[in-house]
Image (cartoon, rainbow, N blue to C red):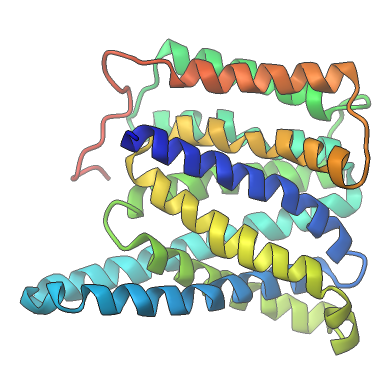
Length: 308
């Protein structure tokens, strides 16, 4: 199995977990507030990764005996900076999404959030990076597909929509931050640190405004475990590992399958039916993914060790 197929497969699995997590997310909100849910799920995700890091550290201990002290300090500094940056972006984006869902429909929120597949290459242009016509065609096709899949009423910008628009921009920044830091540091450690940072940041408004009771948290244990262990601990870690050698625009396209899987999960788990319009949207998104994966002479996003 080639590295490209393996990385793409991990991103598809990530999108599947995230999509099905929307069901857990909506159920969890019946018991606790958005900051409480995000804080606890992120802290749980970081906790799950601690034994993994310990096990991986033991395996590498003999190989690291020859490492220079200066190199080790540099790696730790980069890891900490990357974890803080990714954690702050994750906390902001996920919280805005949760709050936005209170004021807007899930269909609109899913479409607007998925706009990161267009925002990522646009932000990349400001960093001096270019994308080929094939990627742009895939982005356009995916955006149209998201519209057919998610939008069920007239599109207008409400307060909730505005919050989710900001969320989409921050998720785009999160993807670019991972693209920058993941090749430089240990992906699992980076993921763990970002969860702890996001969990602590969300805990502040949780304590100040929501003040959750233990009974409410215990009632939401099932969605919290799913969102914390799988959506955070597994999916975000798979994203970081897979993005080490994947074009960030292509990665965002694959991750946009989250909306497709969310619709399918709703159909399978809570028996929501998909209309012909929504099925057409799913088809367009899958077509965009295939288009973006077709071979090119040269990857338009050149990976350079000294990029800024």
